[in-house]
Image 1 (cartoon, rainbow, N blue to C red):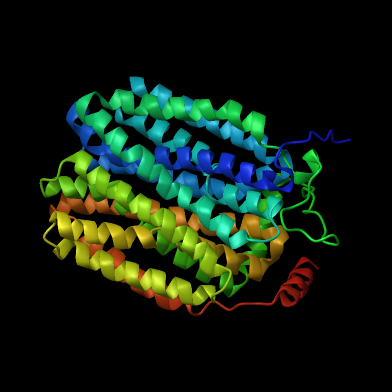
Image 2 (cartoon, rainbow, N blue to C red):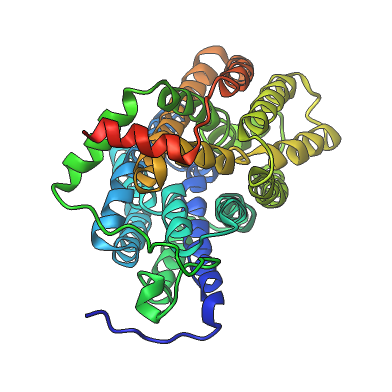
Amino acid sequence: MTIQRRRPFGQNYAFVVVAVVFMALLASAGMRATPGVLMLPLGRAFGWSRDDISAAAAVGILLYGLMGPFAAALMQRFGIRRVLVIALTVMALAAASSAVMSQPWHLLLTWGVLSGAGTGCVAVVLGATVVGRWFSTHRGLMMGLLTASTATGTLIFLPGLAAIAEYASWRWVVLTIAAVSAVLVPLVLWLLPERPADIGLTRYGATADEPADASAPAGNLFALTLGVLRRASKRGVFWLLFATFFVCGFTTNGLIGTHFIAMCGDHGIPEVRAAGLLAMMGIFDLFGTTASGWLTDRVDPRKLLFAYYGLRGLSLMYLPYSDFSLYSLSLFGVFYGLDWIATVPPTLRLTTEAFGERDAPVVFGWVVAGHQVGAAVAAFMAGVLRVQLGSYLTPFVIAGASGVVAAFLALRIQRRRDDDTSMVLANEAA
């Protein structure tokens, strides 16, 4: 029998859960943004080229995405709290051990393999799982808020980390990330119940006759995860969601998140100032993504995605041709911040509509994998093209064009009513 431990705030305790998960996602975002801060300092310290550092960043981004669907299944099987504690521990160990690295393969192991595996469990799929388990209403708004933590992580960490790298040492950068991850472990153990029922509650906004969240699936974990992928991959809507989110990753943390500071350095802009511009994007993304969640509850999500991707693509094609003055970069930062990951709430909404609430977290995990595959491709491609061509012009034009293509792909995503979705899934399972 489950021992029910009462918590303060009554039914509003769901918002305490959101706050804890927000902080965990914030730390994960800070860790994923750190390679962009380390690119120039590691080049100066060890003489490593940008394509070497970009390769490690790309591996980390790729594993971050590929862990998503398996992380969702692990949370369903073993619990959110247990998976989150292990992931935060891995993140802390990866960052701390990188302080003694001296070879490129050390960077690949710590900030590629271990960092990718740890942060992959503390990602968008965590937010999707928590929102589905703890909220019956306001899901779009809550998902927008949790998604915005990625930008808030950038806001909080990047300027400080860049200052530490410039005025102290890159080693203090990685040790700072390790300390933040480690501090969150006891907080999660203390404040994060597994389910509302564990503390005598129901989902926030749930009606009296609403069923509880689905129980953990039985059977082999990896077989179930791959089985969901097999069923989803037979439907065109999955590939449209996958392709558009591939472009989302390609145009955000893969390109801007990894190479923006280095690109600004090519134009004589100091690292701290460039990191401050990224932080400004974080401020505006906090509002933009939260607002996107609110809009997703009210507006056709396909139209939102069309606007987000189209405007993002045009802005990326504009940036290399700007004069890189404070005014033009600030204008880009405000606009791009509002649009950075505003795509997540409408994409999750479309995934849930198409695949149902039981399979949606795992399917969305695979869609997020597409996001990170795109990010990994952009991180590596931009580094290679920068070395070969001497500038970032070509990768930015390519990314901008991909955003315009994604805008029109989003309009082709078909929506289903919940009753239609249930019948489709039942037929597929049969």
